[in-house]
Image (tube, rainbow, N blue to C red):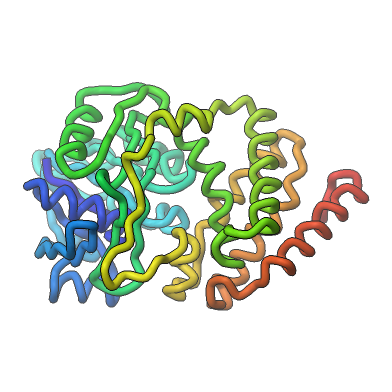
Length: 345
């Protein structure tokens, strides 16, 4: 199989680089300065064993790649806010022997949240979900970093919305030869919703910096409690913290990479790059959506969603909102909802 990595940023670049290092054919899809750097100098993958360089084919879309091969696997690794455009472009791409990618190829959604695979299933017949447990960073064109050891990451994989098949097992086998653990599970969404709860802190990290003080930790606990209440009301199952710890153990331990400063999460990185967009609509916003559908107030997640979008739109620096100010805004948001009977205009 050939892997076409649609979005060669932190996750896509790491997965693509590791697959290439294990001997698999890989094509990277990127845009702008990142695409230029990948084309000129190759993908520089910084990992605990050093900096590895992979000179791989790089395209900016399906037209540049031409007719797709029947054995291509498309790995969607763009941020969720960019998924619709990518799915539209790649779904219509022709495949050798006839038909389109949406009709014939397998699409793997390796992203945070749960929305992209829903979008994908509207177009693609064969969709796979991944619960991405992969600490990685992309801040400069041409380079990505992944500080996990001894494994680079753990990627639970399964058909979407449920089930397993031989294709999932083949992809998992390739990943497991490339420094990942890739459990094939029939209930991948259960793992993804557990990861969604963890990702609710991405906006907090982006807005106010690392969650390493009592005030920030307490606020994160309240944000997550909202998320748990919403999932219970919606009847959505998710893997428990104990189950996650049992699977992960100490398989992915962060180490300090030479010459690579520690960075924040994916939303922090979006603000650092001045991307202009952020994934909060599909993380905190997913909880807000489910809360509105099932009658559960979510003022804290709504606040984080709004502030993260404002910071991204205005290209503010990550960590620029003092945590004490954020806590004050959070208390005000909760009080407003309580005083208005759970309805906020």
